[in-house]
Amino acid sequence: MFIAGIDEAGRGPVIGPMVVALVLVDENGEFLLKRIGVKDSKTLSKMQRLRLSKSIQVICRQVIVEVVQPSEIDSAVYGRAAKNLNDLEARIAARLIDKITFTPCNVYVDSPDVNTIRYRNTIMKYLSRDDIEIIVENDADKTYPVVSAASIIAKVKRDSIIEELKKVYGDFGSGYPSDPKTRAFLRNIIKGRRIPPIVRRSWKTFRNIVKQKPSGYNVVI
Image (cartoon, rainbow, N blue to C red; front, side):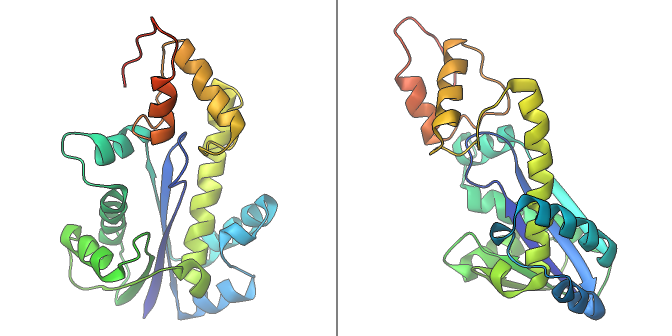
């Protein structure tokens, strides 16, 4: 029996991509994840996550990562065929599950939806296979080491992307709406009238800042 976990990093920021990861282990691999100290990525330092991510990739039979760009996020939550971010995340989860090459397999998914049955049904709607058991729970990253491992992989990948983006666009802070540095960055780029592709234009924070722009500025969102 194989076990896989799915989790994301970067769901909430107004800047940068969301990263969704799947990791898969055999039964011995699950034991090894526990032994090296894998746990929820939010409780670990950046250096701890980086160190653990290297060990996770050695232990796991499969590690699959998908980077979801702001444009895809915007289309999912604000475009003509918009649904919501949960639907997009479920669709990504289904794509990752379809790439699993080891069976039989149980997949544990950290649910962003309080209604875990609804979220599981959404994943199943997009799934192209029926030979894998899907278990969806809230806070699964705190319960299952394999989901914690996916969380770590996703977070480390996103952190590396953010570091590269800052080399290009300058220091925009954490990218979260509550960060004053992030909000200042958004105000500055709006003054320049050129919105870089790293910004999630559908986010309320960005749209509110656009509404506050000086008269005479024409910013297309």
